[in-house]
Length: 289
Image (cartoon, rainbow, N blue to C red; front, top):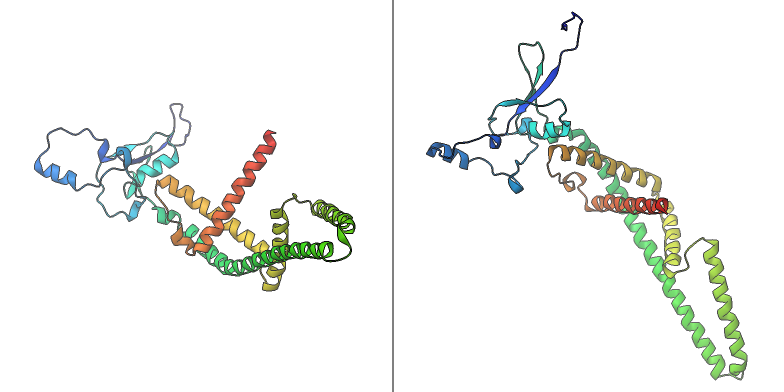
């Protein structure tokens, strides 16, 4: 094509999507046939907003309405949501005698390979999740046994001091400095232990350190690759995020449990997202400070 000066130029391209029937101005009085036809139409969504199915070319209903040209400044997401009402949209090229009809890809079409990847990743995560759950449970039981053993040791120490103080000739004059030195030595030793391991001085920190060490040993014994697990979790959440973005474009609700299958997979991905959100919030707080 050429312009007024005879120079070649690129023809303009416009998109046309079917106008929603609910946007039309209708007469107040309708015939019985029109009323019956209107009752058979699907109801609107919440707030009277046209609902989108994301079915696209897979839709079973009849396409009714006129094709309306969309502005070039329209967001692609808005155009996809509107075009998904019908089975096709039109591409109009300046100077072309005919328009090009394009079948609207459905949400299932757009996300088919993404959902296949998510299913394969979910199966791998499920296999590792069973091993990880077994190791984690054993590590927590071991940590609890160590905690109970420490409690038993304190009770035994109390009983020993009682016997030596009241049932022997040593008496309180000897046992008082002994108990003082033992208690002070324990306090100093515990404080140095927390400093060496760079941990907060608390029972939970000590228990978590004990459990994490036991977990590492069990992972190695069971052949569980923690790096592979973290990579699969990261990949699964990345694929899920892409599918969620497409679902937002089509304005549809995607049931992720059908593609992730196992509840353990759903929980593992959700836990990682929560941990990522917490760490991000912590980093933002540190930057603000």
